[in-house]
Length: 232
Ligand SMILES: Nc1ncnc2c1ncn2[C@@H]1O[C@H](COP(=O)(O)OP(=O)(O)OP(=O)(O)O)[C@@H](O)[C@H]1O
Ligand SMILES: Nc1nc2c(ncn2[C@@H]2O[C@H](COP(=O)(O)O)[C@@H](O)[C@H]2O)c(=O)[nH]1
Image (cartoon, rainbow, N blue to C red):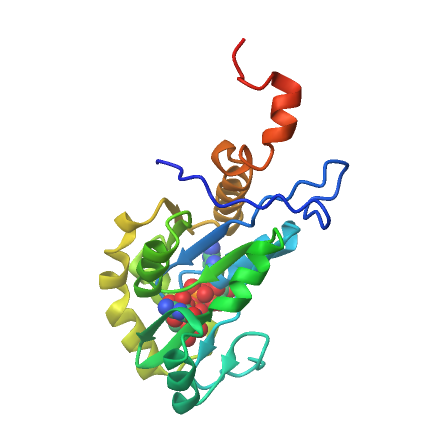
């Protein structure tokens, strides 16, 4: 994988990392996609519990809330008119029609977090991922696969949150969605949950600490430690 250097900030007044140098590295943007029911929300939620300075974006959607879903927590639930107005105003970094509902990521919120040095995960489908990759080539993307179609179906059914026709529609689209896996940087099979979580965590930490991302912001320190030309 070729790692494009991400934009960095040298704002010493409000360091994202604290410490004595006060150097701030801009947050890293991640995209996580998977067919419905593969377990991406479960994995991302578990990762958020492990890691500091990491947030997941709360999307806007025209989908009706499921039982237990809270406006502003799981999604910003909006009408189709409201969504289309926001879209026309350029509020979304990406948006897509998924299973007949509209979903979109709020651009300003994402940029505020990244600017503050917070890493951000977008849990979005492959159409949105393609848009984000085009606009933000420094994004790192991860595709989560279920171990089999049978496992995917049983997870959707056992979740008991969607009606049979909704489950059928989602399963019907799963194979064509999964065919987009080659567009992603990383592939994780969510068979055993803890193993998949460790893999997701490893990807996240490796990207957070990558040299390409950190070196420009740490140039002063690196020069001090290693010499200006870095030649030994
Ligand atoms: N490794 C796993 N083994 C067994 N069950 C799992 C595993 N991972 C997640 N699940 C379960 O599968 C169901 C679907 O998971 P989840 O809701 O996280 O999927 P999702 O990919 O976010 O789906 P959607 O896109 O529809 O929101 C949940 O009931 C979850 O507890
Ligand atoms: N392109 C986008 N896709 C999104 C966004 N938020 C969620 N999604 C994807 O929609 C499906 C269905 O989600 P569900 O909550 O209704 O089960 C799933 O693949 C999500 O990843 C978004 O903002 N943009």
